[in-house]
Picture (tube, helix red, strand yellow):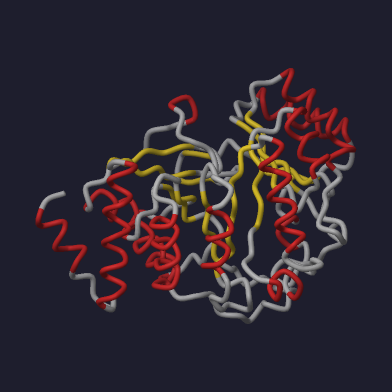
Length: 331
């Protein structure tokens, strides 16, 4: 990197010296292990200019969710494509394949134990795998070993899992029976051979950074394929509707911590985050703090990456996937 660019990073206004040092250490680690490439992702069917994401999210439970987490209450399922049975899932997937989709994110609402009905849909998932080239990932909920094996055998390539760091968050926010429920699911995913892509919702405990660092430590034990940091988005109709998300610098710190703890692992600022000035600063600090991926970017983020000497790429999938030329597009 040129001296001008290094000076630009070291004089970022509004950053305390300790944050500047943390970001610099994470930046250097990112360049050492990942070079100068940075990938921007367009997930789902989100449109950005003339481009559209080619990785739709499909809920296998419609808009139903028994777990009713405090930050979501099933609201995140509402904009997804909702299907009601196995045949509809197969037909929907075939249609997306014909239209040029790269893959599908399978998701849905959980039962009271954090489980999704994967057993019911495993034969349909296998049919999709056998008859299309779609890349299949699943936001698994908190599965047991049998479910993980079913997903692996059916052709799911990635298990996306929300990871929290303490019992309080697990019980009060996710309504799980303690953190052990999560740990048993992570063990099951690891033993099944599914690729593991954890998601951390920063500010999950009513907007406060509480146990996210501990969540990173838990994740680091399981050799994740990538780590995705998303940011609490207050949703109407939930107990967190009026909560303020964490500050941009707090998000930057969390990304830097992830980078230093897992230097070889891709780290992404995921698509769920504020879309305002704070959101732009989160993007900026994420780039400075060693992220290598970002979902749904701003033009300012592109400028920041270019100004810092990064080689940018674009891909029309979820940010959980590795870069592939066949999934990429030019902007």
